[in-house]
Length: 503
Image (cartoon, rainbow, N blue to C red; front, side, top):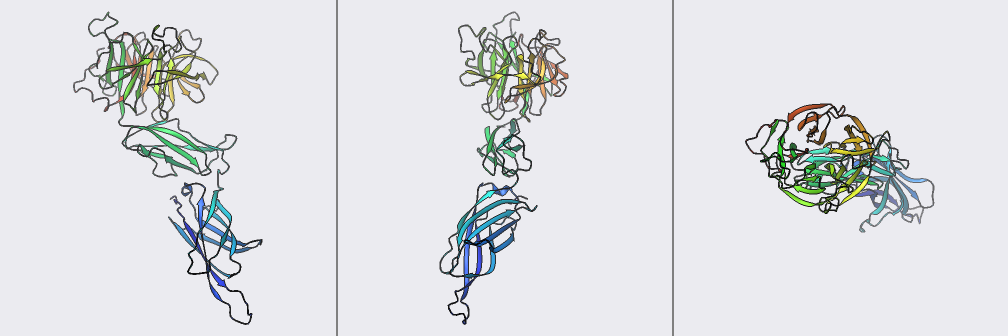
């Protein structure tokens, strides 16, 4: 059990011996009192299990120890009394005090002093405690930084997630065993019940909760955990141009529908957009409970996942005259909100990109380039067909294309956004996979496009082999397929009379 150190005052009682004006007479005895307060460098010092405190006194200018005591710290102690049965001359009441706090393993974790302390001999005068600065000197005291190792996390209301971190020396090497304190900057969203453990408990308010890992010597790192209200279990499906009344019409609206991949049913279509270009990318924002969509005109929309009603945000190219044809970036086929940071990231479809990743402002549609991605083997990419962040690990998974591949084979890859490096998992066995998304249980779903070997179908994808398993056909709509996981609640509960797939 961690002792959350709350020692406020340490009192020392000593026997007082008066000055001997007459050596033949009896000594004038009494008592003297000392009080001192350990002031720890870190408010989180209590994450270290302390077992004993070692206190010493030296006379000013003397090398020898005048008093020495080792005291056991009772569990949950907030004060200690050190009894020093020593003789103290009334004319010599100022000393140098040193403190050492020791763990049960016998390691010195904190030291304090030397600091001057003066004994009070008048019983009617209150003792004023002397502050003793205490510094951490245990494992990792030489660490230069700390790094939270989780890429990001999504946690449901009332649920928990455990974060991990490591202390690093000046050369970037991890220092095992370094105590790390955890705290929340947004306790209304999420709390950290035990500062010694990185377990974060979500509240009942959605939003990014900033969680801090701090070394006892000061360095800190912060990660935002996305707190969401409900499980992302359903799929929001966009199927390009709708074919409600006229299958040959390309301006009859875009098809949105909710799919339950477990029950394998497609619910009745949502509101029809009047857009005349296919939806190519989808991303769900758990903070605003909106789906963000991009189309071939480079327009960015936010969509109500309960109704399918779209609201235009703006054009991602900033050029509404040419509808972004040939602009940089052209249409964003990969789209996803990054857990923790809340950034909306995008990647451009193959043929119009060199593997760059962009950040999209969901309020203005303004786009800024983050950088170009290369594989760990040094290969360059020429675009993407889908982005999805794993809900537990926060790792970005993409459908990536290697530059120079005329067949445009699509690989399942993981991307380190910080270093802009991609690691290929495997080549997807089905051609024409158009988009991917994760549900909250970590299942990766994929949808194939109209030009695929098995078009307009829903699949699961193995994260280690990229093997694909057919779930169901979709079949509604026309060109363009995109999917994103949405909650059962928040996206209003689907209609009570679902329809099976039309395939």
